[in-house]
Image (cartoon, one colour):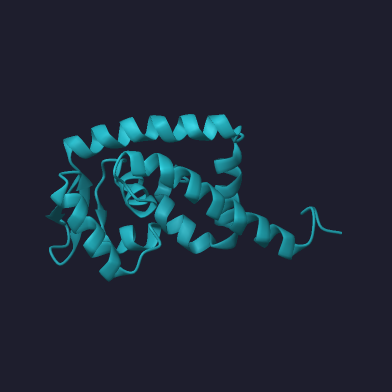
Amino acid sequence: MSDVPGAPADLLRSLTRAERLLSRRLGVVLAEAGLTVEAWRVLCLLADGQGHPMSEVSAEASLPPGTLTKLVDQLVDSNLVFRRVDPFDRRRIRAYLTIRGRSEHQRVDARVRESLAELGVPPDLVDQLDDLVARLAPARHRDSAGATGPRR
């Protein structure tokens, strides 16, 4: 007997439906700030201040490289993101938040958190989903987490 409640298809259906509905709800909040869900994913990744290669941003934002390039171009035009050549590998470009981008991320993050709190989303839900992701894709999770553990 499995510890997972319901049938596997029920879990997949529920996760898919929850992602779609949450994206729609947060999309309204983000639209008020002039952002899309995809742009928000990029800003959240870059908010750690480390700068990330475009290939990593593409994978984490679940966007094909060409689409990501257009999106990052828009974020650059809005003065939210800037690009620099990677100092360790000059063939790579890294993306970073601008000062304005960091400020905008913090402002919108507060509003997104309010929206999630209104829904009553359990605080440990992200940790539980991160754990599930780690079990589903252990090599990718280990690569993106580095030596310090999961990235939040």
